[in-house]
Image (cartoon, rainbow, N blue to C red; front, side):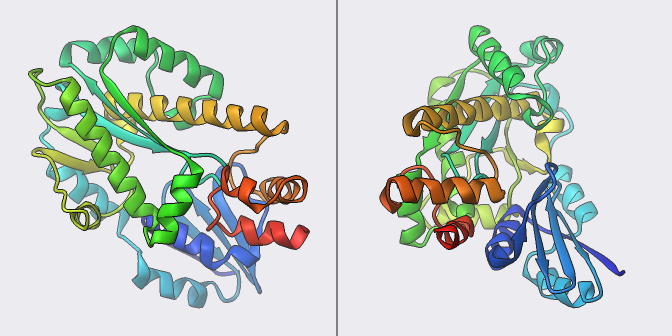
Length: 306
């Protein structure tokens, strides 16, 4: 069995998921999605790696190498090399998002400003990348961040508005870029006059693509804005933003579950397909549109259950 690994941007992973939507199967908990097309198994991971396994792995992977493949070593270097070495230990803003890979629920984006004097304190209370924390821990840490009076902004894009933007022609990359940009703008107003050495965005697309997205709406990057892959592992501000965003997403998911009287699952698994089918059967597609990202392949698979 041949194996081929391609490292791609988050935008490309989303494209791949839609491309293989009719071939999706239950994915391991640590994977974003898994698909089986013929004799090839495609597994995408949060790290940006996509593994192709099987006799036709190389041929299946080939188009994606030109579509959105990146050299991970090169990207990490480029994303980090322009960042002042002192930024991560100084007063800065960090941004991160949650809900982008989940069929149900909104997208939440947070921007957090942390002064240099508060960095060690937040590390001591356990602020870390939300991906390594359980929901209960995330909720408790989010409350701790608020109690410490750490300045932040939080934006929530509900499913109705998300689907409207999709129909308008916005892809998820542009939606995220605009949310990050506006969360930064709102936070800059809050911290006006405070020391600020830079803004760090957890990189979900190439910086020039991000600039193109916001530029299409006649916006531009703020001064001293930097991008870094897996920034939540290096920046306490980005880690705090990941916690605030995730805590809000979990809260919104609980609210949706209470509203519909069923447990709304996270992710994009077969359980998600079955739940979507149940909602359409009990209510209608308009209700589904109010709680789900309709352009995901899960919608069509749910209709097959119907």
